[in-house]
Image (cartoon, rainbow, N blue to C red; front, side):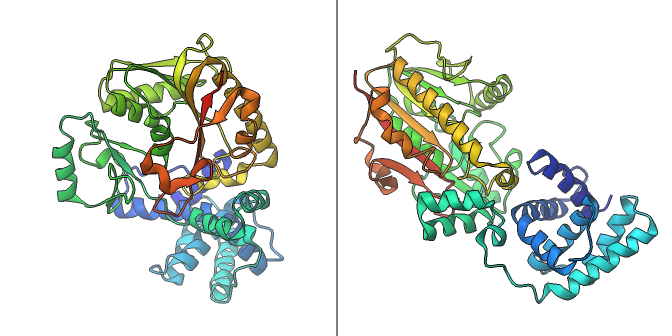
Length: 425
């Protein structure tokens, strides 16, 4: 099967499932990278590509497969300059044949792609941000409401740029230094500006191919998500609980900080996600003091006032990680934000119940909406909590009044929000 044909088929499946599906079987590294580039690029520019296609082919209604052939072809014309237009047209027509189109329809595809080729150089980006950057209108509105127009535009632009993969060094791994040297011999390595235990490599590599990853010396995690854990300041000898623990990145970081001199419990409502968490933790090495419990965070299996440190990794609309999950943006609704905000409030209420007097609760999301983030600060009194103004000095750069935040596009960060509370009574 031709690479472009595979791209068209995977694009259809990806749009149907709402997540980019990559199948690299039997592909060279170069072709696998091209396939990934096409699929993620089309996903991040879906509205823009359709706008252009509709403007050029205003009188022609395209079936789903023909539209996806056109999307893949136009993306290459506009964003992949190495491929000549005539080759893109030829590949598109051959894809149609390979997908079983009759010859008459292949001729239609050929004519369609030629028209796009002729128009590609004259296409002008639309003024409307939603179309130009392929974000639903309500997402743009939510970001502007929360961040202001200037910052929202920066976030929207960052969402459509390549998403960096960060690796975190497992400080408990006995051979971490040897593996770091091995990585340096095979890749150009860049350590993060603010968090030196995080790094990226060039050229990009799938995690399993990074020396030391399979052995547990590294894990994949964006450095933004170290902030909630550092803000929690887990202590030795205390009970630390994380709600919404999958896939285990923050939980393993807690273990790195306190070692085996504290009890650490991860809670998740999904059995499948807990299984993934268990596998991730096992790869990083046995930590005897971590327990995983299948439970609803709104009904925790702990008595009142029994937990010293609680991290709520709350379910959210995930508007801070749209670069990583490009198709997710098209499935979000205003109703989702309200529904998730109500779930978050239940988690906070239950978290306040199990927290000891003077205990620390960190509430964190990977989204960028007022309703899911800063509105929670206004509700603190209702839950018997107060904003705790103490925090580690290294987090000062990320503090905004009484909460902490990172934005996509800034130093490779994903979007992360975190606020630290203390139990009043």
